[in-house]
Length: 208
Image 1 (tube, rainbow, N blue to C red):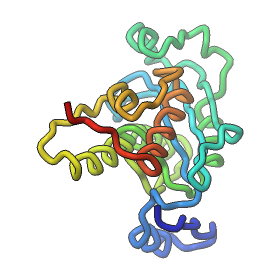
Image 2 (image 1 turned 180 degrees about the vertical axis):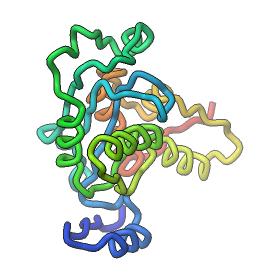
Image 3 (image 1 turned 30 degrees about the vertical axis):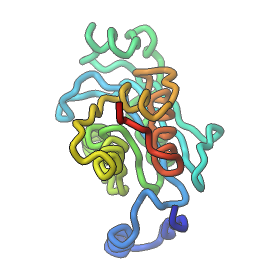
């Protein structure tokens, strides 16, 4: 692994920060936040947030003592299909954080650090929409898609192999235990371990 990249200070202007991340790969940052949302829909234009989970990777190690786990008060769009997948009932979410407060806490936790996720584009699209609509804030953090990183690394070794990029297949192939599947914190933790395996471990042998 190359030397870890220290994230620029908060006072850097937007264009200098964008230039910095153009010149440096986000996966080389000293600190990375693995983020996951559980939502009511797979359509980022409509999805409401049920829970937010995040864990911190610092200097190539998972820091479980610094994590974010938030439940959000139930949106009107919560339905039986969402409950079936995430096991979060309306009764489980009553009295939990208002969405605005959950968004502020998420912003404070992630700061300017690169975000890591499994097909992160969806989570970022949902979070970005709610931040813009509720708080008038932007989300411009650099992003790392663990599925894309896996595909890129494995394609170099097995250029003719069709890769199964499903979450559970990636975890199984990389030897990562999956705990708390379809919970925001559980999925964020599994993705962080997948990332560290891809960055620091040997690639799995897929030849049969």
